[in-house]
Image 1 (tube, rainbow, N blue to C red):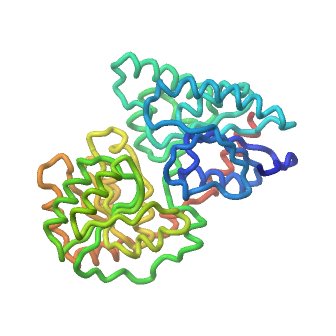
Image 2: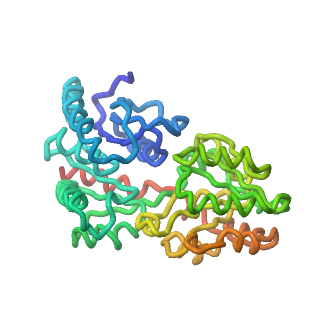
Image 3: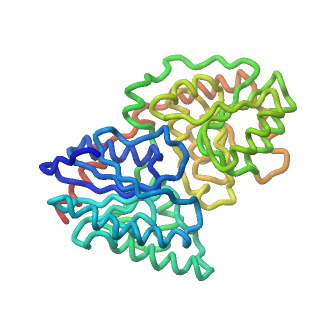
Length: 381
C-alpha cells in the first residue's frame, strides 16, 4: 500500500468500480493539481486492464454486482463503517470527497461530516424522469438530499442538466460543472493525431469499441454484415454483458471478429487504426442514451475515424453538426441493412477528412477550468 504524504492536501475519491477510465482521468487531474489521493473502490470484474495512476493509494472495498441497486444497500452500509475505521490512521481530514454515482455519494455523505466538501459526479442518471414508482420516488428523495449536500454537481453532458437535474432541482445549474468525456491528455500526448486521413477500401471495417450492451442495436448489424462478406467486416473490442452472444456470432460468421478487452492508454491508437468506422449506436428508447455524450464522440474523431450513432440523441445532434458520421434509428426494422447500403469508401473518406478538421482542443480534456473551481470549493469549505 502506498504511503500517504500528509503534507499535501488530501482528496478522497469514491468509485463504484476500479476500472472506469473516466475516474482514472479525474484522479490524474487532481494528482497533477497537487493533491494526495486515496481511492476507495469496488471491483466489478471487467476492464481490469484499466488502472489508477501508480502514485495513488487504491483501497479495495470488495466485489459488487451490476444493477440490483437495493440489494447493494447492506454492502454500502458496511463500507461506510469500514471506511470510517480505515480513515482513523490519517492525521488530517480530506479537503474534498469526490464521488462517482449516487451510491458512492451516499457513502461519502455518511462516512464524513458535512464540513468536508462533497463533489457528486454522474455519467448516467440513476432513474430518469418521470418518477412514478415507489422505488423511483424513494431514490428521488435520496438524490435530492445528495444534491443539497454537495458543493458541486459534475455531469458529462449538458443533456443531463437540461433534461434531468434542472427539472429535478430547479436552480441546480448554479453549482453544476459540465466535464465532457473528452480524450485523456496523457493519451493525446502519447499518440499523435494522424496528419492524413485513412484511405478506406473493401472490406469496410466497422469497429464496436467498448462495453457490449443493447443487443437490439448490435445483433441486427452482425446479421447484416454477415450477409455481405467481402464488402464488410465487424470488429469487437471490449467486454460486457453480451460478450457470450457476440462470441457465438464470431464462431458462426467469418467476417465478424472479437479482439478481447483493452487498456485505453495503451491500445486506443492501434484499435482506431484498424477500423474505418466506429459504431456507437445505443438504444435511443433509453433516456440516458438520449442525454449522454459518450467518449467515442471525441476518441474517434481524434484518431480520424467517423461515427455511426443513434437518431433522437444529443450525440446525433453533435455528429450532424460536425459532419463526422452517420445517423440511424435502431427502432426501425432494416436499419442495419440500409446503413450498409449507404456506406462507400469514398463517402467514408470524406467523413474521415471532416473528423481530422476538428480542432484537437475540442477533443482533448483541459484542466484549466476544472481545477480552479475545485480549489475554490476547498477555500469555501
